[in-house]
Figure 1 (cartoon, rainbow, N blue to C red):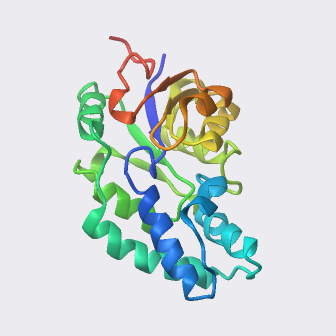
Figure 2: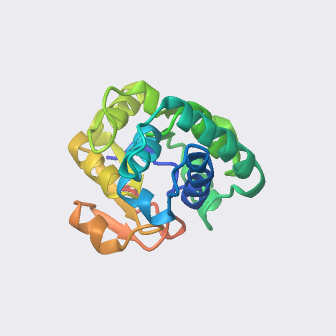
Length: 217
């Protein structure tokens, strides 16, 4: 039986993938990198050091952590103004909360970004008693570390947790952790999530039902 739900954040709960891409383009421009939005696609869900650094190095510019820090400065300004949940997300979270099922976040991003994103969801912060960010795991997705840490902090076995993810690497991480994997095609075609091993794929996060999550009707 599923006893907890672990959500990815960017591109899953919060409609922030375009914002981090825009912030990264602006930030990297200050280091002489003329990046395009499509350059970031291969690095989605793998942590922001790689998200920013992978694109910098694609253009022959060595990555420095200060690049990510500058991108975060820009990101926090934009997300405070434009950040929002995907349609139907607050209602889904409310339905899960009403069932007394704990929720967690498992994101490859740094803590400052994850907390900013939770703030734009429009639900109480305490609905997420466990938040695992990318600084807490030795390995990022597709490794299962983030989700296994979340399950441990929830006091549950991996098989008792379901994961909601929009990225291929996230689905692969959930499967590697031995968790139910629910894919949402917010940012990628459903076929890619299915091929990664998702147990079920819905068109968007707001379309996910309690039954999809493995919760009793």
